Amino acid sequence: MSYGDKFQQLSKYDRETLKGNSLDWNRKPPLYKQYPPDLERFELEKPDQQGGQPLYSIIQQRRSKRSYNKTAVQGGKLSQVLWAAQGITLATEYHQFRAAPSAGGLFPIETYCAINNVEGFKPGIYHYQVPYHTLVLIKEGSYGLDLARAALGQKMLRESAFNLVWSAMIERSKWKYEQRAYRYIYLDAGHIAQNAALAAVSCGLGSCQVGAFFDEEVNRIIGLDGASEFAIYMSTFGET
Ligand SMILES: Cc1cc2nc3c(=O)[nH]c(=O)nc-3n(C[C@H](O)[C@H](O)[C@H](O)COP(=O)(O)O)c2cc1C
Image (cartoon, rainbow, N blue to C red; front, side, top):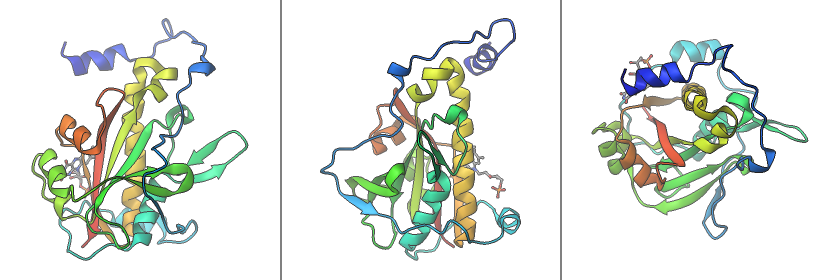
């Protein structure tokens, strides 16, 4: 059996072997990734949490768009897409819930934004700080071409106004789900990317999902170690 087939079989739950494992709360990984305080931070506009186009109409309109014009995207649209992807939509005393569901509420997915052409933001790789709805600039520069090369030469990553890169911090999910975590991170990322794609339609942006990429090249561009955290999915966005 090849490794993908084996993984599917070995990560199944079954009634005979599923043990109720107790969770070690002292070893629960942190929910939010932090960056040094000296890195530059950028406020995002307050997102619209009520309006937008009617949902069914957005679902009807969504189509993968792979070519974009050169118009800079307004910062408010970037804000809207990030909020729809991972913004906090409910805060209680103990939990902060986000726009997309996550297995066990463990939120193992991090969002990076590779900006090519967005009003008010210099080109660079940014990390989306979920609790503050801000972007931290990790490194300045145009990485669209590098990402396009890493995505098997898909030009849309260079021509887009911005690309979102989703990584998994696997220990956040493994802490509870062990090897089954590898199923859940991909499901989580799918929900997030779909929310972002629907928000893009509402903002009048085109977008496309990207699953085809050289993993280690994307990890290197974003600055991920590829073991504790690794890129699993990307999306491109731009005016069409
Ligand atoms: C997991 C996944 C990975 C994808 N990867 C790519 C990709 O690397 N490049 C691309 O052009 N489209 C990619 N797509 C987009 C699909 O090709 C597209 O969704 C499909 O053709 C259906 O068209 P629609 O999105 O317009 O409905 C991907 C979609 C999904 C869900």
